Length: 588
Image 1: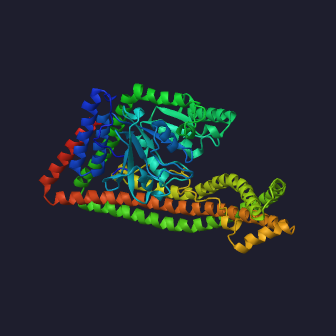
Image 2 (image 1 turned 60 degrees about the vertical axis):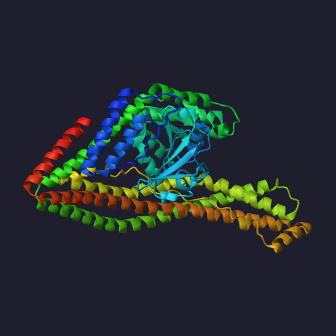
Image 3 (image 1 turned 180 degrees about the vertical axis):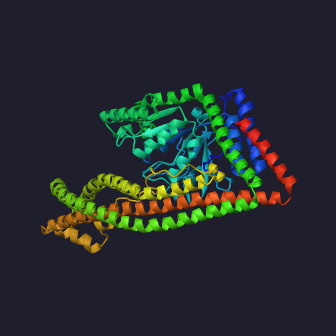
């Protein structure tokens, strides 16, 4: 078992017009070691390890390395990758787009394919890619797509570099963002895409720190340079560089300021675009072979550790009496049942906490609305003076749109602090569940359960919301522009009889309705995220604990079958495991 997401590898060469950037020793040494590890995993029935080892061997032999594009959603990562390869290949949009990692690699012609969870490949039309890799068409990856590949005839990719478009980070730590986190072990270098307003965010910084601890090559990019001023970008670049140098304890180098949209549309100043391209070309020429070798070494280490844990489990199950294994499994089940009871008890505490949080955000909502309404009404009255009058229905349309603009200006800046406060409140509640889960993991470890060696690390108390915000500003178009013929006729007549004020008063009430309704929707969005995130955290804890029991039961079942054949069979199986263990250790 492995918790890592493996982006599919194939035997199709990515090279065109030149030899691979890898050293001959990589093809003759690294890939065969991975293939041998795959054979040993196959012998032990460890199919996920076998599959990943064979896929990595293919990547190593072809000299391919992954440059992942990481950052918060809405940073323009997909647009940046499209601009770099010179083709509109991955979907872009104004909402969080990417749902699964998409590998962009060299090919003689444009084409795309997806890989499903069962390991099968499916060729798709380029136009259909968004149906499988976007959040809108494949929310939370419900179509069970494990990865996607896009082949592009781009010179930048012709020597083995592959870009990876990763799902962006919001205030979410499951679904899309968990997918990005799971891809970290497969990253060889990274394009870190940040913004100037705001600059690098908290969870974004955590991800970059995790990537930076694994890989040396981080290329920092401030995208959307056309939307910010020179002082804003300079401050953001300085802040980003300093905070990353502090976290990673090494110099970060230049921060490239670009506008991917301008480059896709071939307009505007180049800014640092040519420098960014030169940096990527330098990465290929000077570091490509080393990156492939590092990927090979990391993969051998990670997969060997997983396979050694499988060997240890199987050997322990063979050496101990069946009755002892059964007692161990019974102990696990008792501990898991105890954890279930504790979670149920925590649920009652959480309900009380949730009432407190609901009251807190209700108060925050009322305070905001009272303040925002007085400010918005004053702005409306002031800006109303510059609204062109003219034809009645057109005047209604203009003043209603003014109400929408003012209310949006008030609501959208308030959304971020509300989400931040919601995240803080959630973490305080979730910490109890995390502590409980980690305590039970520790209890199992203290009992000497070797099965834990194959499990993921302990639950992280620092992780925030596990679901994405669903808030979108509601403009209530049908209210602003009623389709009724009678209303239209009345709007024609009102200005003629000097009753234009009636339209103005309706627009003012509409402004109040927009503020009140959308601010309540912000409040509900935050409260729903707290509840859903807590629910998902509970699922994570249950899954983690039950997986331990499942692994132990599988090892026991294999041991039973061998022991039924007698002592010689058991001894032979143990000797076989010892032999494989020595070979795996040597490969690593």
